[in-house]
Image 1 (tube, rainbow, N blue to C red):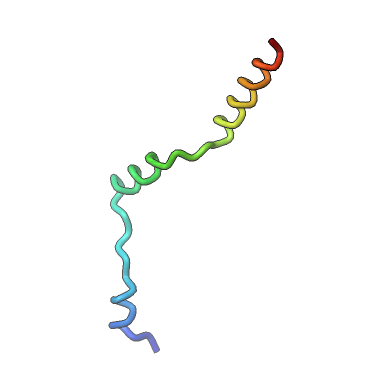
Image 2: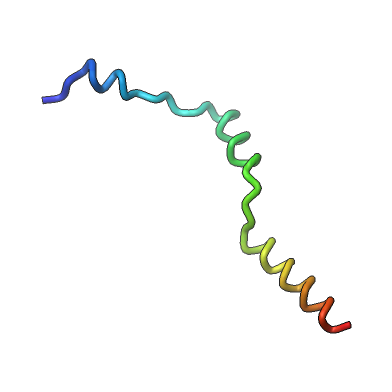
Length: 48
């Protein structure tokens, strides 16, 4: 049986849309396009 009081203690509200956007955009994570740009930059530098 579910203990309602226990579940309420565990409850964490979800982020609002604005907060979620800020959390996502403030993470400095590289994506595949960043990696490809870095690879191209390095390749051009080694050609010289």
